[in-house]
Amino acid sequence: MKERQFPRARVDCLSREFDSDLLIYDPQRNVGHCLNSTAAAAWKLCDGSNSPSQIARTLSRQLSAPVNKSIVLLALDQLADAHLVVEPVVLAKRLSRRVAVRRIGIAAAIALPLVTSIVAPTPANAASCFPNGHPCVSAAQCCSGLCGLFSHTCGSILIKKR
Amino acid sequence: MQKLDRLGWAEGLALSAFGVRAGVRVNASGVLPRILTVLPPGWKKSRRVIVQRLYSLVVAQSSERAGMRRLHVLYSDSMRIARDAALDQVLAALETDLHLYIAEATSDMTFLHAGVVGWQGRAIVLPGRSFSGKTTLVREMLRLGATYYSDEFAVVDNFGLVHPFARPLGIRDDSSHAQTKYTASELGVASGVKSLPMGIAVICQFETGARWQPTPLSRGQGALELLANSVAVRSQPQQTLRRLHKLARNSLFIKGTRGEAHGVAASILNLSCARKQLETA
Image 1: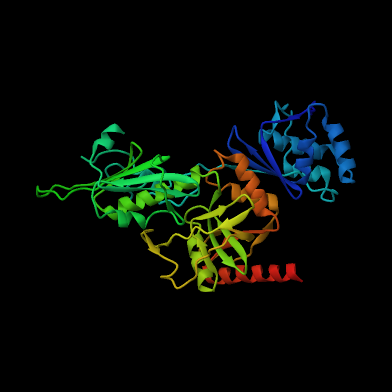
Image 2: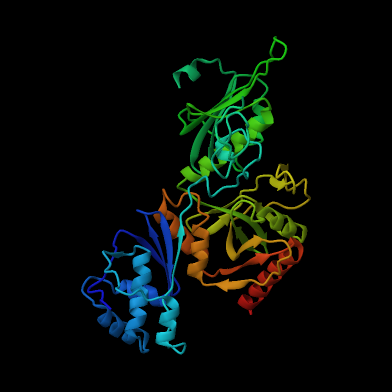
């Protein structure tokens, strides 16, 4: 397995700590991420000068618990999927969470890294709207953003009946 | 816009809400009182003549020719956003667009798509997309004695406090999804006046026959759910994150699938009570 050499966290993202979790907003992709404590700690150590082995050692010190390098690789994999690290090196063989759990063992002293992501809504998506087929007079009223010009129903395409 | 400006305008007003200024003008007299009913809660008349967005309502005059249908037309600045023979429908479109514009444009507050009730000095926030059952749950909590704050937006200030946005509740008909509006007083419930800290945020989705077995979320996961319902997160990410951070402190987040609203509403209110008793103990 090829090791990620020196992963570097993106610096253009906004972040806030919520207890041990870290909420990150990516303004380029309009995506929000929640990193649990392990993923957050790993992400903060991605400064371009730490290798995964070094990150694992530092995490062990910080968390006062043994941290396997596989845990760091799993975290980096998830961070790379979320586009939170710059130019990630692709692993020759992808480590799935299930495989990682098996390899690390269920008795790991720390939580497995977890990155949860959501796409930020557009203003229209974050408001009440009508479903397809519902009568409408304005595109803003429809969840689909489409109000039929002739049918006056949501989600209709603009074809005139013959 | 110049073409629109040349039309004869009978009446209009400039308004300010949450720091956003908008204007509405109409070409027929006597329509303004109906427009006032769809303006956002807490709006004030503005003396300034320059507004950030101008709505122009062209009311159809009665047709002299038989069989000819005249339509009312609504413009947002120069863009036509609604056209219909029924004035109520066009006014509903004005309400939707204006409220959403204010939610998006204000920098004073962060608007979250959520139902909100007040209960024992805390706000219970129910974020969720359309058809997740927010209004039903809000209505059920009101029936159990909660105070009405909003069925559409949780309005969060710089201190993380939730302000009321008590527009009339839009209760949908089960089959047609058509909304009927009821004010809090029509429902015989009290509307919230002062801002409240958030006690519990409940992320739930309605599913027929589902059993309510919510699981707690971490504050980060809960804040992510709130972020997913933030109106202006794309345009104001920094402010949104800052306010969510303040809103989420000392709050409990739970998530689950719910069935009928009655038992769920009672369970949430009981949980809020229990949490408050724990805090005070």
